Image 1 (cartoon, each protein chain N blue to C red):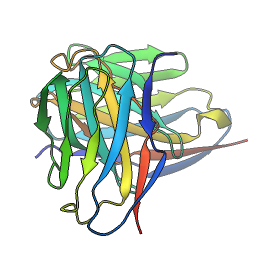
Image 2 (cartoon, rainbow over the protein chains, first blue to last red):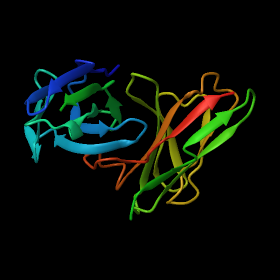
Image 3 (cartoon, one colour):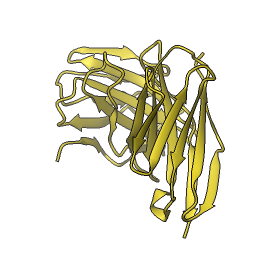
Image 4 (cartoon, rainbow over the protein chains, first blue to last red):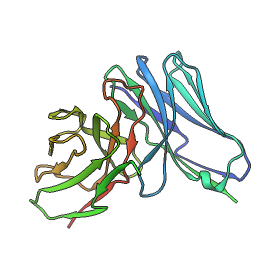
Length: 111
Length: 115
């Protein structure tokens, strides 16, 4: 059964720091890896989608990478801001073409 | 503005009662999804529909039912058979469910609690 793991479960950093969130998955058959942001009591906002043929995707201060051989993806956030505080979830789309989600990393950026 | 609307935002269910959660989208998306999120956990797929009048069970379909009579609407019924319904329910849609390289767009969720 596909499993997606995100470490750490929570992270607190001072404003301006660069940070990396980690995601690992067990299913080597991958169509894409997606990163989402969730604010408290809200739905998910799609941040980045990396297709299986790609190694990374960038949007503004966000960069996501995909290493299929090791079953890992990272989300890099540059120059963090208090507005980046949220829960970040990764999701793997594999052989079943459905998304399997990790439990998320709760990020707090301190002003 | 185009988007996904879930209602109500909060819902309370009595023992033995069926309740229906609404999900409407005006994005002209073919595929729609229902997820359940429990505290500190990721989302788990309940049901999905790739096209009107068709839907498939997800990983945790027991105790739930859906219909897809219109492209814009995908209501979820939580039946009395669902013994632990307290959770945050999220509806999503994507342009084409057969192409998993299309991102899913989410509503703001419905929080269901037991009275």
